[in-house]
Amino acid sequence: MKTSKHFNIVKFVGLISMSLISCIQLIAQTPAKKTSYQFGNIKTKPVTIYEEVNGFFTDSAIQETISDTSLEKKINATNHQTPIIRKEDVQFYETIWEDIDGREKKNRLLLYEQNAAATNDRFIAILINALVNDSANVKAYSDDLFTTNKSLADIETLFNGPMRPVTVTRLDGTTYDTLQPDGSKALATDSIYAFRIKSQYIYDSKSSRMYYRIIGIAPLAKIPGDSSVNSDGSKAGKEMAPLFWVSYPKIRADLKSIPIYNPKNSTDIVDWAKILEYKYFDGHIVKTSYENFKDQSMSDIYKKDPRKRLELAEKTMMRIDNFEQDRWVY
Image (cartoon, rainbow, N blue to C red; front, side, top):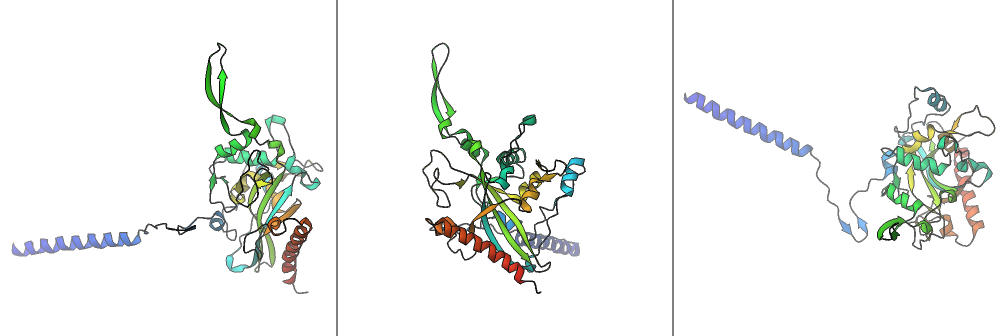
């Protein structure tokens, strides 16, 4: 009887010990909650930057699979799959920002408008349709690091104008107060003809090739009735500024599914992803990450000398081309 009593005590102590060990292991596996601190304008809380999450070196999210539908299969079959680049193989990369003007002859596809079947093939319409219809994947951001979301309501306010109080008179003579958009401060979609692309030139030492990767796209416009200063230092309402930014890897699937009007060959199906990734457009470099410690655009460096800005843009492109050519031994 005494032996069984001691056995029960030992068994009880053993169960308690095993429970404590399990709790300690569980606590050790649970990540500690990080506390954010503020030191002046320095925030210690880690900010998730879309550019780093996607990597743009080993991004498997943009490895699109070919659909079974005949039209999409025919479209996607003409597009190359984005190759995976290991970070260990990257010998050089430079980030550039370039503006595309739809009024130029080679960029007229950006402004192509087709009203058949209530569709609109202008590039700004394609971006907005992707934000609305594919909101689970495509998001709008206020910066090119994709850290601050911009709601669809904010974008709608840009094109319809801010809400203002208005007194409306009924047929019986009575009045009531309501809110209506102020059309005088609305941004006309027809006035958007320029776009900004943030991209990277990446040299892969394994394949001995320079790759062109698009990071984000933003429509440019002058915001009416706004005298504030944009995040890039430009004056809103007077200078062209990005309305919102869209991550290209997230919108790539939407762009691949949209065929483009080909004025020279109607049987050759081309989509927006191919147009952008193969650089079938004329772009003007406005900013580079090379020796840019203050993160300034070329217009900030040479404010009153457009010729200097053009020379700096040409030197940037020449430096990238020369790096690739110098890797080859003839």
